[in-house]
Structures are given as structure tokens and as C-alpha cells.
View (cartoon, helix red, strand yellow):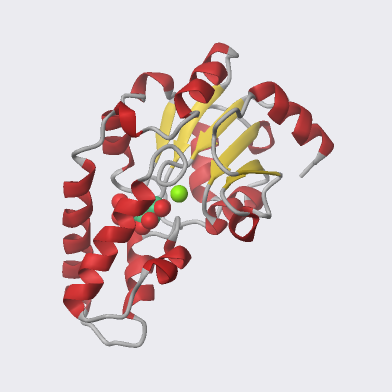
Length: 218
Ligand code: G6P
Ligand code: MG
């Protein structure tokens, strides 16, 4: 049976995917690099460095310049998350977290972001979470399974006892690579490889998930 849930943060628990987008857009505009909301879709769940490399494309920058741009984007992003409060939790998130906790399910965070802890704190859900795997936990970014395997280990569970909740294609790929079940949040064009696909967390209940996962084994 399912014993643990591993939640991605940005775009799953709250709308920080939008904040990441705006910070990248600001940087791209300052650098005169072509970028827009549609191009940003490819960056969902992608690490800071990989995201920047994707945006600069063929343009040549020194390592120092890349480092400065990553720092600048992060300043914009960190500035924007200061306004986050528990009201910024996506609808259905707190209900699901509380239900899982009451059912004795272990809850971990599996986010590529080095800012995940700050976001969790600002959302006021630290007390509902047993372990955090973030952008500082492992070397290899999603779609490698390392981050989720690290999270599972933190909550003392085998991967096949865990369900990953993700909004990114690379996140679902990472869950599959780690031998975990997955719930994709968003359109099937993005998270269609997940065991279960839902538009958001509204009305997502453990009992339904367990029933659906039995019908759709990994
Ligand atoms: C998450 C987000 C990405 C972001 C990455 C790194 O995966 O979905 O948009 O690039 O984390 O975040 P960071 O806060 O460390 O730059
Ligand atoms: Mg995400």
C-alpha cells in the first residue's frame, strides 16, 4: 500500500511557477534574449542552471556572466516570494496534506528549488511535512530520480510505497525512473505519463487515489 507522498512545490502546492517565469522574463528582457510564456513551458521543474542555458541558447557567455545571471534571476525570484502567505496555497492543498497526515501517510517535499524551504515556511505548512529534499540535496536534477529517491529515504520508505505529485514533465519522468507512482497536475500534454492526471488538487482524496492506482499499476 501507499505509505508516503512526495510533493513538488512550484506549480503543485502554490503558483511559484509563475514567479519563476516572471523572474526569467525580466532577466531575458534585460539581456535582449528571446523568451516568452510559451518558451517558459519547457522550463517547468528544470534546475536554475539548465533553465538559464536553455534561455541563452547559442549566445556565448563566460562562466562568470552565467553565474551573475543566475544570481540576478534568483534575486528577482526571492524578492517575489516574500509576499507569500498561507493564502497562496493552491485550492485543495491544505485539505489533502491534512488528510494524508491524519491517515498516517509520510509527507516529503521533492523540489529542485534551493528556495523550497523558504516557500514552505511562508506557506505555513512546515508542521505537515516530515522531510524536505530541495535544490541542495542531490547533484543530478530531474528527470534523474535522485531527488525523489533522496526524499523517500528521508521518510524511510521504499520508492514503490511512494506517490510523487508533480506538475512538470521532467518530474513525472523522474518519478517513473525512480520506480514511484505519480499524480500529474496539469494538462495530459504535459503530465500524461503519470499514473493519474488531475487539473489541480481540488477534491483529491487518498481513498480515490489508492483505488485508481490499483487499476493503473506502474
Ligand atoms: C523548480 C522550479 C523551476 C526552478 C527550479 C530551481 O524545479 O519548477 O522553475 O528553476 O526549481 O529553483 P531555484 O529556486 O533553485 O532557482
Ligand atoms: Mg513544479
